[in-house]
Image (tube, rainbow, N blue to C red; front, side, top):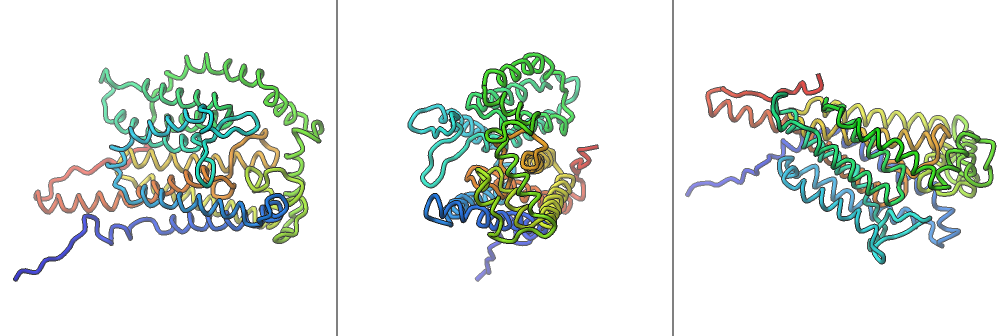
Length: 402
């Protein structure tokens, strides 16, 4: 009787080749984010919602969904993800359109950026940040394979798709997210070394359109005026910014300690969300701020190294795009909290209360984890081919950023 052995398609060893130091950095960022949310939101939640753990519970529920997404994008082969990409893109666009349907949309402060979910609201524009990255990564992979003489080599579909998504987000009255998605799109064009001339006509039309959008909304004009005149609007548009800057300065070197800062708990609107970094800085002080940036820079360095090791453009472009989203979004949020940038609705990845942000952030981390073992999987295939075909194998060019 012959002996049968079960050999999985991907051995356990291949999964061990995932970058464990990057995975640890993800867990650390998420864990510190949950801890910070507990510190910053407990008093407010107890006073207004009679549940000191209200925001933490919601974040944990969203995180559970996010970790499922992380596992999917970390384990599902990248070639299958590419096949699913049309479905993912149309799903993201469809979710964006649902924000315009009464009964499904959730409106807040005149903006309808969210849709109602069983345990939390979901903001489709957050998902667009990830979707536009993997869509452009896939498109530019095909674009780079074509010769310059190929008549089909054009970036127009990528430009049109990006503009459509940005326009829909603008229509949701989510101005800052729309500009951020456009910014990430431009970064993807730069990474892929694609021709930027297609953006010239859009810039000629888009810049006046953006200025018009700012001038036609009173609160946007007032936000810019308040940013340019920090000593004015102290009880309205500058109140949140001034309170957050006071909280940051109050932290000093070592911080006020957990639960001790009065500025954080009582005087900063949305401290559990967009201004959570102010609560962290007051509680942990300058040392805590340095710790945050050390972790963030370590996270970014590990992700960039993963991208540079990728043997194919799709995983490399996608990894660079994902880390760009997380890194620049973090810088923008901290810039707003410290008064360097005008007030926006950009959350702090891993930290801010909000189901959409943590779900999408973890999904992007899953994609990066998948990419971290691409080089190993490809080398395994290469070795198998070499053994079966007498060593004749043309390896992929990994010097894609040169």
